[in-house]
Structure formats: C-alpha cells, structure tokens
Image 1 (cartoon, rainbow, N blue to C red):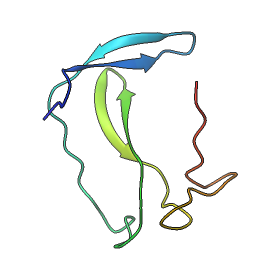
Image 2: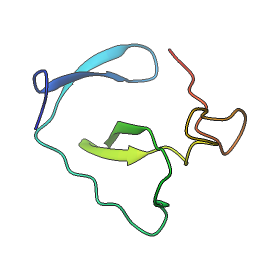
Image 3: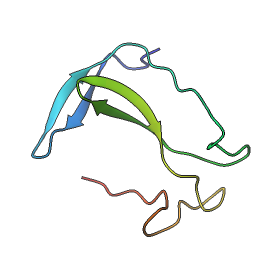
Length: 75
C-alpha cells in the first residue's frame, strides 16, 4: 500500500520526473538468502513500475563497496 501517496520521482536519464504507481508486491525467491539484508527499489520497466532488490548487503550493517555489492550512488 502506498505510504505517502502514489507518486515517486523517477530518473529519466536527465532529470527526475513524477511517476504514478499502484500497490506493489515483491515475491522473494531462492536468490534471497534468509537472514540477509536487502535494499528494495522501484524500477520503471517499459512503463510498468516494479519492485527489485539490491544484492545482499556485505553484513547486517554494511552494504559493501564496488561492483556486485549493494553500494548506493546518489543522484
């Protein structure tokens, strides 16, 4: 259920543009290790908003750094 409305800022490659969405669900699968920490993101997939996860964090308190980690780049 959207917590604070049904619009979020979506990066379009040059600027953030408002994107509207409905309630979303995320199905966990074998790639999600029990007890690991993940970031959850909204992703615009050819006009459909989807939820995706980062790779598992390096530890319960650190995302890790570099390729194939959950390191975050802020725009």
